[in-house]
Image (cartoon, rainbow, N blue to C red; front, side):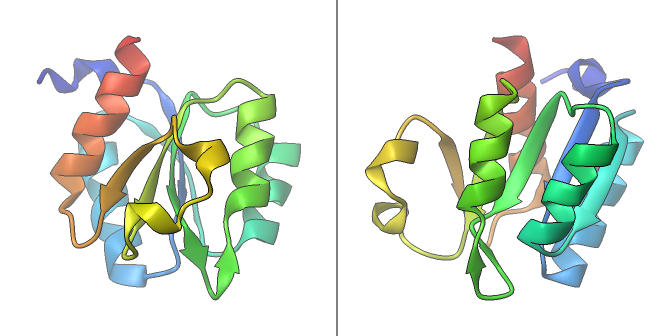
Length: 123
């Protein structure tokens, strides 16, 4: 897939695992995206949304430091921002109200997340 889809796009990353966040951020920057974050908590993500320009898309780890990311997901939905969930849990553990959200199961490489973000941005 052409990575031009991500060029100049603001992407929010919510991920509490340092190496995953770092690797994903690096790949996104190399694809020309503008990074928002990464943030490692729901509180930090909500603060970022309150003070920064709205992102074009986001990647959200379902579990940030033991806290469900759903309040941040709801804030993105309210702003019309498409996003993808990342999770180490089974997709069945995600509430049915988020069944329409794309989900990437860990361990997945950053290229998988980039492909999903590109799909969201081409819709």
